[in-house]
Every structure is written in C-alpha cells, then in structure tokens.
View 1: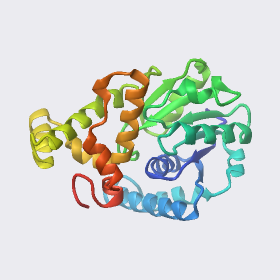
View 2: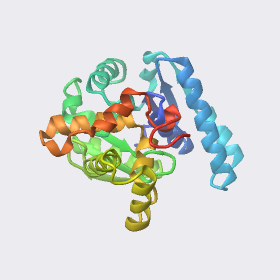
View 3: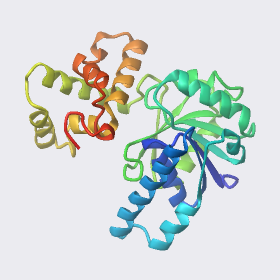
Length: 283
C-alpha cells in the first residue's frame, strides 16, 4: 500500500469518473483514460459539479476540492498508464471490451501492478485469463453513485493471490469505502439479488400490474427502500441492466434470469434512463 501513489482508471464514464473522484479526494494522483477527449471533458465537469455539492454540504473544503481536481490527469493515451501503481478498469459491461482493455493494461503497466475490474457481473477468473498476471487480477465493484455509496464488492478470481486481495481491501478502505469479500459467481451478490428484482418490477409494468410510479411507491413505502427499483434502473442505465441480466441468464442457464421484453424494447428505443433523458421517467 505504501508504494501506491498513482491510480490509473480506464474508462471515464459514470463509474470511472466516480472512482476518479473518490481516489483524488483521498489524496491519490489519478490518471484517467478514455478513448475520447470529449468524454474526459465531461468526466471532469461531472467530478467538479459533484465536489461542489460536497462543498455545499460541508463535506469538503473548497481548497481541498481544488487540490483534488489538480491531482486528476486526463489522457487519451493508454501508454500513460505505465506510471500507475494500481489500475481500475471501468469500461462498458461487455466481456469483449474488457478483455481488450486488460490485454492492453497487461502490456502497459509494470508486472507488479494489480489490475482491478469494476465489472458488476462478469467472471474475474475469465477476465484474468486474458493476462499474464492472473494472481494480480481482482474485482473491485463500486456502487453507483460512487462518491456516495459505501460498499465495494471485492471479488477474488480463481488465481487471485492473498496479497492482491489484502492490498485491494486496504485501498478501498483508504477511499473511505467498506469492502466486502464475495465469491466469483455471475452477478456476485449485489446484482445476483438486485437485477432480478428490477427485472420483475419491469414485468409488473409490462403486464399492467402497476404503473412505474405505483411499483416504486410500493417498494419504497412497503419495503423501506430509499429508491424504487425502476428509478434505480434509470439511474444505473437500462442498457447496463440488460447487459447484466444477459450475463446472469447465459452464465447460470436459468429461465428466471430472462430479461423482460419491455426492458429490451426500451433499450432498443434508446430510452436508457437518466443518461439519455428518458427511461421509466423523464429527466
């Protein structure tokens, strides 16, 4: 842990910029990689706005915000990650895309550097097989929104070493997070439980059991959930929900994980939730 000064993050989307936020706020230098400069510009704007909210709530001093932003170095060049002491991948939830990133990371960063994936459902063992350092590959699944949510699922692959796990656990704690170790099964714990619930809520809408507002109200008022499953799906991204359900169905082979046809239809229509301006609700 003492040797980790610079965190590399591959992917500057919702999860990537959130991880960059907490890492920089915790005092680490951050190299934030994306293939598009426009995505990096948007990520930095999102981080700044999110930190402004923390300042307004008295959780962050203005000078600390300035210092944290200065610790983030955006780049479109993967070679720049060679300077990282720990790398977290946060690209789309697609095995092909993640495999490509891990092959590049394995060739770019020092052999002693741990490569973590923020995957929410894909096998860490399978991802690690694409590298020459499977003992140094681990899952580090943050929750959305990253600056707010305390949990990080730490997922060991078949070859992940005890040292890699211990270092990753301590790093998560240094971010102010609470790490929980889970085993390498599709969806881990969080999405193995959450996504079928969201999927069933979508079935309720499709079958006319209730409106989105009614379904969410029942779960909030009757089950004490802070946010309804459909509003949460909009926050996560309906495309991400579909990707995870497909991983669960393919990997576990059980029809109970079949994605709701309405979910597929909404994704096909580009109604992805908050990020597109419309999902089950309009934003």
